[in-house]
Amino acid sequence: MDDVKYLFVYGMLKKKRALSYLLLLGFNYVGEAILKNAELYKHNFSPIVISGKGEVFGELYKIEKPPHLLILDKVEHNYNRIISDVRINNKIVKAFVYFYKYPDFIKDNRNFIKIKSGNWGVNDEG
Image (cartoon, rainbow, N blue to C red; front, side):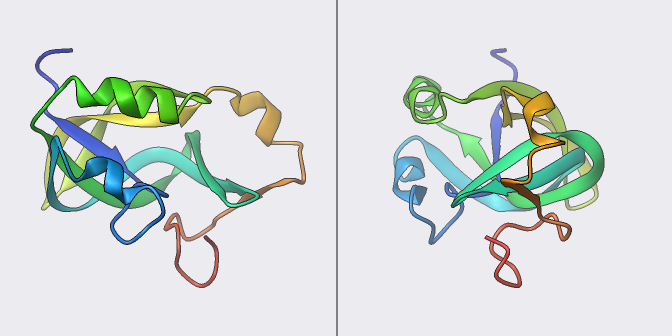
C-alpha cells in the first residue's frame, strides 16, 4: 500500500463540496480523473460508488501525508478504501477509492438512485 500515491474522490470530498475541507491538509489536487468499472448512486444526499460497468468522474489528489487517510477512513466508515485504476490525462494510475461496503443492498432498493452521468453534482443529480 505504500506505493499508492493518489486518492480519487467523487462526491462530498470534491472541491466546493461539504467535506472538501478534509483534503486541505495532506492532499494536493492533481486534476479531473475517471474511475472505470464502477457505478455511482445517491442515497439521500450521499454519493455511493460500487463496482459496475460504467464510469465515475471525479478528482485525483496526491497523498502528501498518508496518516491523513486514517481520518478519512473514520469519516467514510460505510466504505472500504480499495486500490483501483484511475485514468487521468490518458494515463492510468493506482489510487485509493472509497467503495460502498454493502453493494448488494443497493441494486433492489429504490432509496438508492443511480446517477447515470457518473458525475456527482451534474444536472441536479447530486
